[in-house]
Image (spheres, rainbow, N blue to C red):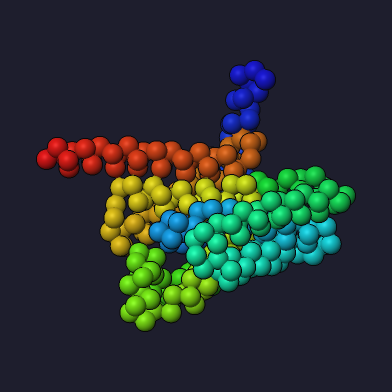
Length: 286
């Protein structure tokens, strides 16, 4: 590959950028909604040390989507079924961190192997198989957009309803239990909400890259702020910038959108980490 090929891959569609942008409006809206909800729920994922759980759920979601693709069913529905099974098992059996990590470690290879089996048996277009791993955000249809946005709104409403007890349980579970907070039910409800948004993320960005929108924006926000309101707002902002910015950059060329989203997300985290480290040094010096 020479420089001309690289240039075409990056900017080959720039001359028709406006026309392409009109075709991917659904993708932009889907990315924005996922960025907001993913950033908000990502804060609790990190507070509860459950980044590993996100990846575990995504593997079962991938298996469910692959199974639906093989059987000719709706892929989004299959993805949701897989995610909810994984989230329910982790939430039910993994009350303690040690149990949770071992359960996730068992579910991940099982889900990945099952998904690979289903894709091996599938005789349809290879692009459909590849999109389950790396996402298909640039081909979101109007009907799919309604389902994805509807699921995201359900997750957002559910998250707001349990926000205070979930925050208490995430930061100090022993005190929350002592104060009468139903920590078991709160944890289980959070896992179900996480399963739903992971299913949306898998359909848009792919099973392999789901952490880029459900963990990295929140991690970046926590590097530069500790405020109970500032961190969720910054995480949502970083998620939207990563998702929408990745789409807007990708449609100028022929490369997949996922590398753009993950790169923007990583750059935001890197900048926040540098800013946070410098601020900490100045504070210690003062």
